[in-house]
Image 1 (tube, rainbow, N blue to C red):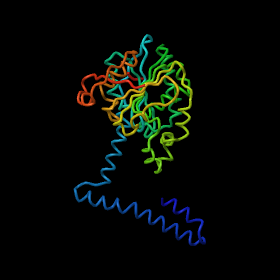
Image 2: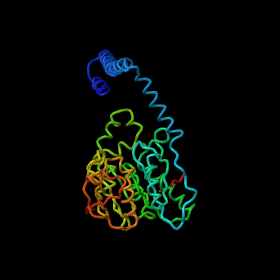
Image 3: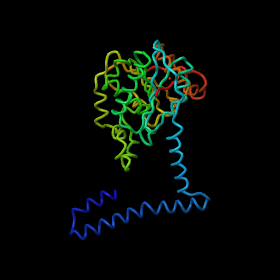
Image 4: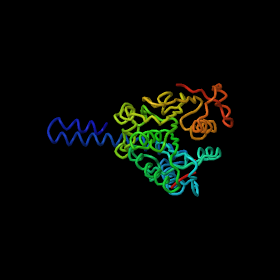
Length: 316
């Protein structure tokens, strides 16, 4: 807003008035930004804390995560006889968020791989969707040549689902993947990206522009023809505040199946046994079972729950 006011003022008056209005505007903007921070710092110090100290702690925690805490135990090798599952995580998440789901799928006997998708601090996923799709294409093909398997399944959370679909539909990934499962993917975009777009972060994070509701990127993705061999399963929830309800289902002509899991919030898709069980059933082409009550689903995390149908190990 200060910038808008400043540049709008340029069309008025003499050059001296422009300078005056510009300096006045910048001074007001600086005061409106600084005064609340100083007041908050004063209150925090009265309580024996400090906003500056807290900000430094957050920074060092992020730096520690970036440098030391993004590793997942790597598998020695993959079997040429098995089809591995590629896991993809979402916006501003790190590879570490996949740890629970990797373990749950591994216990079911699946071989699981994941990649560090890069981004802020080299860890937190903020890269553009097309460039990430090209990146995972290279990584998957490299693993296929190394271990001899001929196809993969993909399980993707949130923004990772958009990456997966772009890879499958635009980068030829459907040649060696015929089954993708997305969880809480904002196929219609999310208004939350404007929290970044209206800040300087919008200049650096390409992906937030690609997840705007109604943007040309999403429209093009929805209009792309889906290969006949590709099955798309979309796990979604009306408790999800990122991809709300059926906004988490890809809308296009093809073999697309929406799987409601209304007892889950956005990030619970990554750490629930019933989700891992559902993924296993889909991959094995087993039918999903009849629906249980929402109360039963939400209260029995340890039990594999039944769902209604409406229509992992790491690699470097």
